[in-house]
Structure formats: C-alpha cells, structure tokens
Amino acid sequence: MNQPSQQQEVPGTQQEMTPVPDSGEQSYRGSGKLVGKAAVITGGDSGIGRAVAIAYAREGADVLISYLSEDDDAKDTASLVTDAGQKAVLVKGDLSDPQHCRDIISKAVEEFGKLDILVSNAAFQMTHESLEEIPDEEWDYTLATNISSMFHLCKAAVPHMPAGSSIIGSSSVNSDMPSPTLAPYAATKAAIANLCASLAQLLGPKGIRVNSVAPGPIWTPLIPATMPEEKVEKFGSDTPLGRAGQPAELAPVYVLLASDDGSYISGARIPVTGGRPIL
Image (cartoon, rainbow, N blue to C red; front, side, top):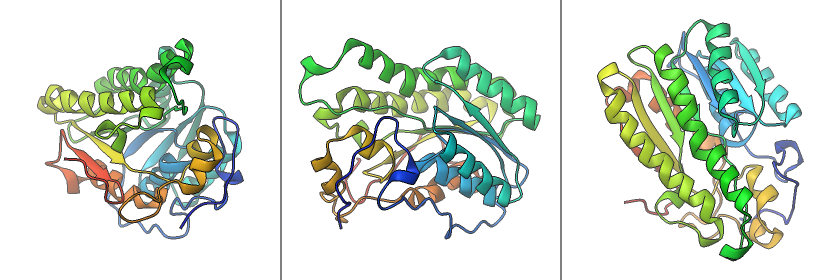
C-alpha cells in the first residue's frame, strides 16, 4: 500500500498530505492514565507529536505544543487538546536556539505550575545522495535541532520535574540501521538513544525515568517535505509489514512510557518499526 507521489516545502504541513496521516483523531480513547499531569511535546503540531498530544490530552494531561512555523496544524492540534477538556499552550519558534528551548520550559511551568512529562520529538532531516552535497550549515542545524535541543530542554526541565516524571526522546530505526542518504539525521537519532540511556542513569536517583522510542517509517509531513517524490511513493513498502506506519500507532507507546504503567521502564529504546529489527 503506497502513498501517491507528492512533494512539499520544508517543514511540511499535515493538511496538505494525501492521505492525511491518522494521528488518532477519531480512534484514540483515553482511560485516565495521565490525569493531573502536565506535558511538553516538541514538534507537537503534526505527525507523531500530534498523535502524542491527542493521546495525552485524552488520558487527562495538559499539553504545551512546541512547533516551528506550522500555525494551522498547531492550532488544529491545540483544539483537539481542548476538546478533550485539557489546557493547550502553543509556543512557536526554532529549537536550534538554546534560549528558545529554555523559554519553552519556563512557559510550561508558568502555565501549568509544574512539569511531569517532556517529549523531545521535533526533528529535521534532508535527503542527500553524497557526503559532498551536505552543506556545513545543514549539518550544524540538524544536530542543533535534533540532539542539542534535547540537552537544553532536559537541563531546563529537570529542576521542575518531581519523582515519577518521565522524559521521552524520539529516536528512530535509523539509530540502529542508518540510511546513508539521511546521514546527519541518522547520527542524531543514535545520539538521542544514547543520551536517553545516560540520562536514565543520571536521573534515576531523582525518580525521573528516561526512555526513547524508535519509530520506523511513519507517514508524517517530514516525508513529502524532505524526500524525493519517487521515495515518497514507496515509503515504508520495504518493511516486513509492507507499509508505512501511522502516527496513531506510536501514541500508545508514548502513553506507556509517560504513565505509571511504565514505572520500571527506564533506559529503554522501544522500537515501533513495522518489523525492521532493532537488537
């Protein structure tokens, strides 16, 4: 089952995709797993972040949605959070700026009075067929957006996080099986998994759990915005399950790791890959 050939400008928008990704808008049903919690989700406007925001809100959490520039997607996600009876806060800006990362955490604490869950999910990637064609600036920006931002977010968040809190990084199947055409992105995804493993050990004494999720090929705006049309059409078809995953299929794992159901899970990297192995 392939997607139609399509292309967008970076960073891409959910509303212009065909088919529009399923982030659980119609399907996710909460059961009170996160009642009273406050969460920050970067890249929460679309794709996996949107699915996590919907799930968290329907489980009872207030949600701050950090996003780059996709105002319509962000407002739509925020409305789904408020429809679930929870508070939604939107913060627009570039995560490659360390001060912006700190400002996100400050805004969350100001609005919610607390912080229980941090999901470092936003990411940048571009496809390149050779090392020579990767601009130096793009390398630096990819690292700043994908991995340095997580460092700055965690450093700012931890002083506000009580025992029982959870930090979740969005890694990738590329952390274990790197695609050569996504070399900068793949390197950051390996770094996220590694950083989460370190933080799990550093923050365990504080009662803060840290894990990463490793998605396989998931149908999000990043795909038509950063891959050639011929790859978009076949995206996900080479997995054992034979298709790309939908963001909604990731949300239950992020709920598990944020909730008391995952109270003894820390330092893990959980694959959701359509059958691609991570060992």
